[in-house]
Image (cartoon, rainbow, N blue to C red):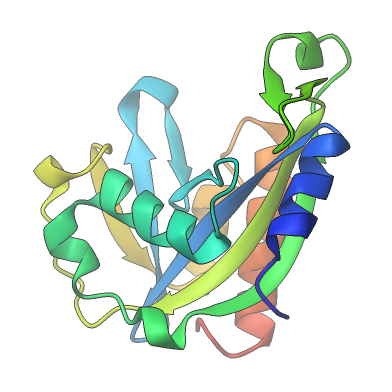
Length: 175
């Protein structure tokens, strides 16, 4: 799968879906999962793709914002692979909460999110949690990550996390 073009990203916005990247950071066939105490949620690091921002730039920005500049030096962006895309629609009534803007400046009701899953090799497991937006982290095998994903209380996030973990396992990226 190729990285999304700026036109594709803007088309998602026109349809009411905010595009984002999910950083499937891999070290020794394990994936990084992070925990946010305030949300009581284990997840894979992720972030939005801003208007007029290339997906690759969003990947670099998100990694730095969420995991800290020192850690992101250990990521091999040259070997980044876009492996999947999925979308999540909000429950009826939830979509009036936030609005998004197309690249042309048109405001749209946000109906959900589109996630681009990017595998990025990492040369270390060492992460200074104090440099991150999270409270804990763990490099997980497929079995461990699936266990954590099953406890995600947000149905859409649970579904897409479970799906990408299965895809990564089936591709031999995680064990």
